[in-house]
Length: 233
Image 1 (cartoon, rainbow, N blue to C red):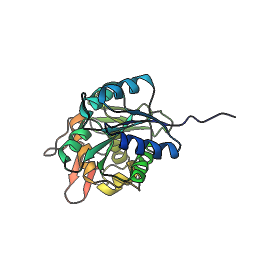
Image 2 (cartoon, helix red, strand yellow; image 1 turned 60 degrees about the vertical axis):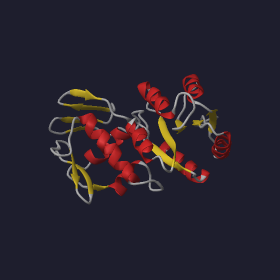
Image 3 (cartoon, rainbow, N blue to C red; image 1 turned 135 degrees about the vertical axis):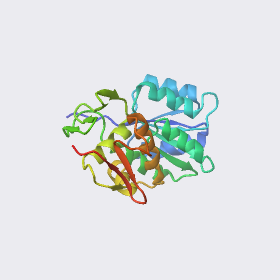
Image 4 (tube, rainbow, N blue to C red; image 1 turned 30 degrees about the vertical axis):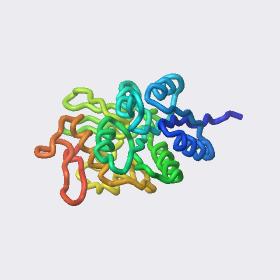
C-alpha cells in the first residue's frame, strides 16, 4: 500500500509564540512543518527541502520578508502566504506585486490561517494533469497543457496565480467576471480576504502581458462590475 506524502509548509516568523501556534495547528491538520525565525534561516530551510507552501512574515530581522520572497520567486512558483500587521497596507500590496499568493493580517485566527492554507493548496498546480487545450486570441496564445503564454509569439513569464487568473477569464472570452467570481474560482469559496486582492493581480497580469488600463488589448475593466478578456478566439 502506497503512502501519500504529506504536504510540507515552511513557517517563517521572528516571534516564537506565533511559530509555535501556527505550527501546532498545521501539524494537527496533517501537514509537515518546518520553521525559521529569520530570513537567512528561511532561505536555508527552503533550499534544503521541497516545500508546498511558505507562510512568511514580512517584518523579519536581517534579511526581511520582501527579500526572502524575491529570492524564492527567482526560481520557484511555490505558494506563499504573507503575514503582515494591520497598519501595513502598503507592505501587503508590495508583497503581492512581488508574487505572493495571499496575505493574512495580524492578529489572526489560527483556524483562519489553516483555511487559507487549504484554499491555496486546492488551486491547480503546474503539473499538466488537467489539460484544457490551446486558446488563441488576436496576438495572445494561452497553452494550458504546457502552461505557456505568448504575446505576439513572444513568451511571457507568469506566476501560477496570474496564469490561473488569465485562463479563468480566457475560458469565457467576452464574459464579465466579478471580483467575487474570480476569487471563488481561484482562491476558493471560503476565501476570507479583501476582494481588492484581485485588482493587484490583474495589474500584475496586465504588466506582464504589456497591456494597459487606458488602451486595453487583452483585459478590459468593466467599471463597477469586474474584468473580462476582450479578444474573441
